[in-house]
Image (cartoon, rainbow, N blue to C red; front, top):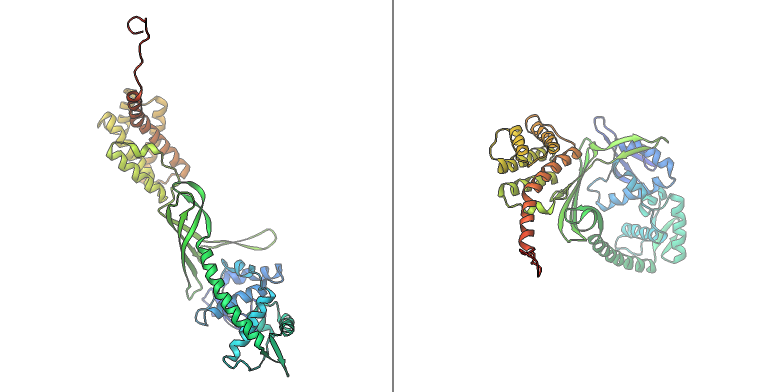
Length: 412
């Protein structure tokens, strides 16, 4: 027998070599897995907070009991602080847990008494700090009249205790239903393609799966259906955590810090650049299709594809203006010769086409900021050459002609 890494009680530990986790069988904490990274972080957490071990022990024990001894709860570097940060139950909740445990031991013989041999182990079940607190809890339950002491060192639930247990079970079922309804109304901050960045969204549905491989590698895959609180648009969010992507570092005070290896994906993809409204009104079908492809690539975070698409978009637009004037350089020269592009614009466009060519032929990936400059150049050219003329014609048609003033000559 060795000591449980969490509570220090006697435990059986399976730490076979070649695995990045141990399996611990503890009377207090139950049976659980502890990854190597969590094991390295645990002593600092226990030293920093005097109730961390008790909180973690209770959290692991209720997870073990809830699984009916089928699935081992897994303590990882990702959930260690979360589990150890949960507050211990209130005194009323601890007394209810005590009654539930005694009730489970006696079964349908409700007048039976049982002996409590290991109070430290019971502390993990009811959520007390240690065995001494369990003694205090038994005294309180005795004063409330919900348990009865039976010499020597045996305890039984009174009729009032059974009534409390029955009423509490019904209340907990009602509370679980209320919590489920609350989860449906949970709001989180996410970017919305319609409303903009960091908008409130309701989590309308959520589903999560997780597992741990034999070598201790853990993962959690969570899917959520989101509804924007502003425009009511529906989207899906996937958050995938993989233990091998966690990064550990050490703070200046010696504490171990972990950065979670979580990858977020949204469907439809979150656009990192708001599409200008005028691009939806481009009449040429080729340009319209290329704009759609460009913003789909941006939403999918495909920077190389976006760079190639921007180059293709400019090529198609310039061909519509000057025809098939040759290669890119010849087309740009033709645009300058026909006063469709200034010398300053020419320099920017040449830089843009060089970047697009590098992406297409050499796999060059521009930074997001560089890509935004490329798209600014392309959109600026198309807006001036295709959209502004349409706006000008529309304004002329909508503007009433000037009326001649009386007494003027020749209508002036």
